[in-house]
Image 1: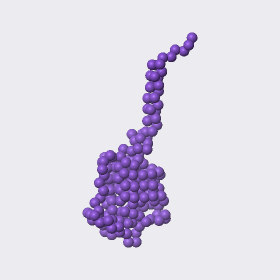
Image 2: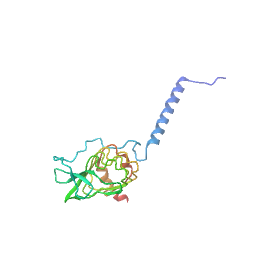
Image 3: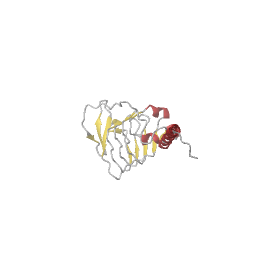
Image 4: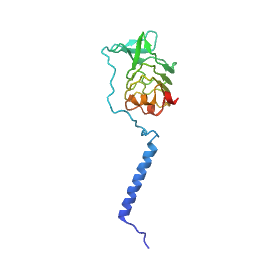
Length: 193
């Protein structure tokens, strides 16, 4: 006797199998935090940049940082001239008596030899691609942080530990742009330490 086949049953079976395959793919892609691998929960909002009317770039005397003076009189670090002998970077809270409150766009871009970074209390802003393509595995961030621009930690492939000195609630209130998946996956807040 021939095997019974129904065109409707075949279409229904294909639809069910397709739904199961899609569900399995989604489960495989999710990393356990509700963030799809390769995507992040970046805030789809405009993140304000620090106000800087004077675009003069200054160099820290005897130091490794280049900076700009913001309109409020604080400093935004705009570059770093650290050579390969410096692998652990501790950003100063002041330069020449002025508070450091921002890390500018691409300020540490492609410093592949830097393995750890400590951002001081008082910094509220990290610019776009500030640490993009860096070799950092550990980052310490201050509770004063309010804004992390798009792609600030883009392609930081070794980033596995992010210490944040504030609470989980404070971390959730930081505006974080897209392209910072590794940063968000590896966060350890003060209350979790």
